[in-house]
Image 1 (spheres, rainbow, N blue to C red):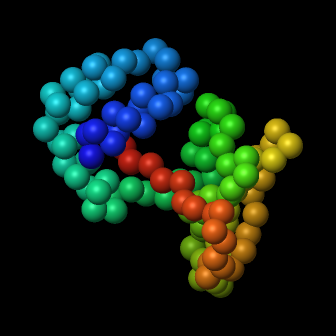
Image 2: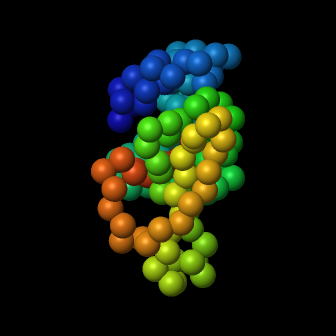
Image 3: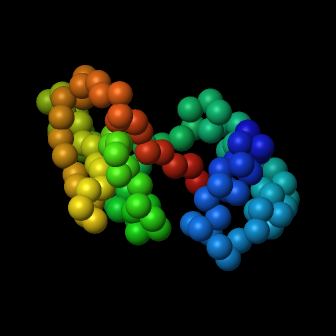
Length: 115
């Protein structure tokens, strides 16, 4: 998992120009609990992004220009079979709804984990 994280870090340097991988790796290895977090990521320890986090992500760059991503949906909507998803078009972030059972090949999930 550490190698996957390193590759993603290096592929997205523009999102964290003030950090170096060596500093991140050192910090991860200095905190024994971080290995557990990385292991939990592999075991579905990743949480689905909220609308707020998705908008924050979009402030770092332009994502989902040709795709869309499911995000966390309030219980009252999920209880009725609905779900929320987001995408970026025309320089704006849009939030939509659909049935939770809808399947689209270009719609994935945006997740996060706290380290």
